[in-house]
Length: 310
Image 1 (cartoon, rainbow, N blue to C red):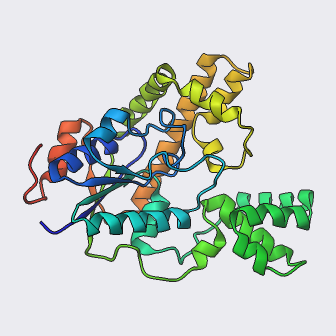
Image 2 (cartoon, rainbow, N blue to C red):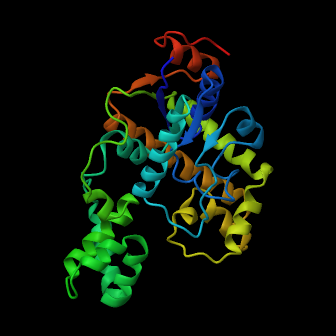
């Protein structure tokens, strides 16, 4: 069989990682991460990254490989993922790209040329921060995330500086990356895509249960280690769901029960945003609506000739 690329998207706790692993075992394929938080080291439990047992069952790429002190943009992930996919194909292996970051899949299949609409709140916040910091400090902060924009925008051009920052703040991708033109990293016809969309009540219950399990598995230790590094709060890793809530507990500001409840609420909200993205941006993707892992697998392989349960 010619090397193939499967894309599997879904909200948190939807079962996409288990489906991807089963597909990898059935095909001898390799798994590539498309989750912006699972990129970072030291957050395996909190971000539901693959366990050592799971990584032993199939090759995994771009999981836990980035230091939390770095802030990867969508463009940087795209470059890394493109290299990984080329390497996998060069070895004659199948690739399974799995994750919940819709912007990663968009970049992979459609490129990064179109800047999405920026919420008014992001614009007003950027304006306020420019006024508070002043141009020099504001430009320095922009340079840490979009050095090309900070370098090309003329002194005194407040409007363009604010625009560059608001795009990064709202999308997680530098304006420079959005403005690059080019073809999709994987051309149409070279990939097959599916999006998991289990019933909302089931999904939310899974989110709640998984947060409690994360605490038992060491999530607080991961957050404590992250806090000890005194990293900038605007780094992507510091915005992972659960970091802020459990950090507040570790500082003695909330009880553990309160921290868990708040993290559960944020996880449900995050899952809702992911589903909204998929419905709007992945409307043409095949939907997997089952909630049981076996049902999801059967629905996934139904139109896939040659795939049988491992």
